[in-house]
Image (cartoon, rainbow, N blue to C red; front, side, top):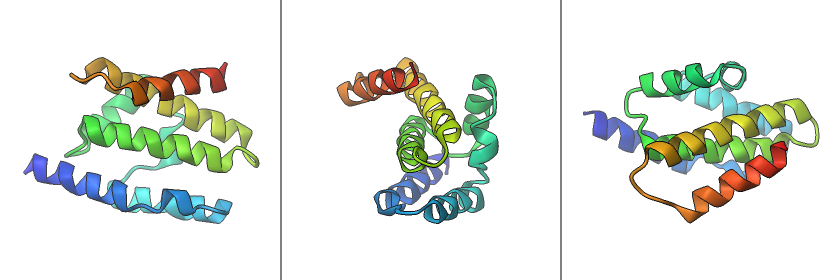
Length: 127
């Protein structure tokens, strides 16, 4: 049953129109959808401690390594979409994305060059 939930989460993450965001309102609509579908409030989530972040995600049924990595990608893209108007929020989103990518890299049994490149890119952005 947890495996089915994980597949459902992946399907929802993959169906989200992340690349279609053109306005801040679309980003807000998207974050509202995350809250409604996964009870995940991005605004609270980005201010949580690193330990709270991981604990919160692991408490969601079906949130596996692949879904955590998908969420990290979403946060990174949200940061790109908000960087012009909200630099502080963009930095917080990038910081959480980095945390999640590093968590996945540390706990995953596979090495992924793409993931490592994202980690390096985020570290450079945040430096």
